[in-house]
Image (cartoon, rainbow, N blue to C red; front, side, top):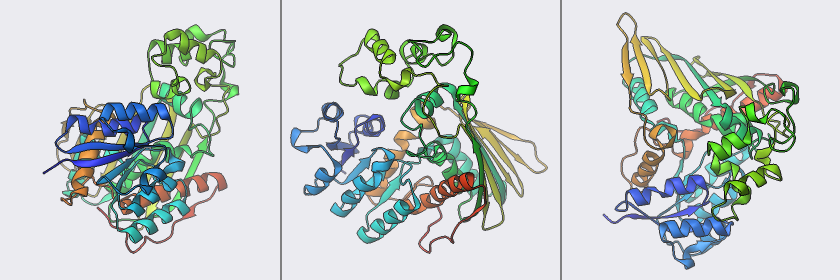
Length: 423
């Protein structure tokens, strides 16, 4: 069987990660087109995957306007670009793998549903944690009935201090106008809750949140406004931009976006950037961030069971936890350790330890792409496959939680759509 031809829309970090499947499995996938408004990113992706000049496009709309020349598209544009870049692809006849969150409002969500129904194209969402062996094995245990009917789900995400600073304090997701943090960071976790509760629909959502960690009131004595300009404690500060981004080389995909025009920037180029106009050179306690840095969500499903999720930004160690309580037992563990315990009522606990090495997201990234290719070929979907309908509940919970948090109320969700399909 010949490899599938794929076009990449959005040639940033995620697009290159998913596109790398073609280099690992050239017998299954070829990247034959790329669209990105940034000429350097477009050229970098084209060189990496061998895309000819006539298949390089400034926009997704331009790509979609050409006669269809590939089997499917992978869209990894920014969240607010998903709808305008994906609809033309669906109309042209492309099946699409779309980065999460796929929509930033309920209106966008239903427009996607209408488009998929009208075009009859396949639209899969990049909920990559479903493909991580840790979560997949837990879901298989639940599906097998190992702990009976799930009565309660508790999940938590502790966002590492350096990740929180890079993305949600100094970075491009630091404003609620871009995305509420629960949608931007925790749509994975909300999706996992709904996946574990497949067959049930969320009915009520309550949420409380705050911004009390990364605020001027929490700034240590001697902190300035920019790490390398007016800060007296920079050498000893855990959030030092120099230490995190230059010395430790962490979060380069965020920190050096503003100097992408410099080929192979030196450390001095980077330091100059941090001293001047680079937003990642700012003090974490004196930024323009307005998203919550901690939030809790409570969900009630239509079968009367409940779930809770906690988000905490700025943790010393990044950890995702899951605890399922069923009528016959419990499953509890955390992703980073690749370990979970199955404890059935009356039995000795069973301890499971997995190999968590591999690509990002617990080993889920390339497994996701492989599954998408199978779906495009018309083969059997896996237990992890997330078609559009499978992703509706988690996004609606995120929208409801933001409303509940802002208006201090419990939000009622509408009934599940008739076409909603549980996995």
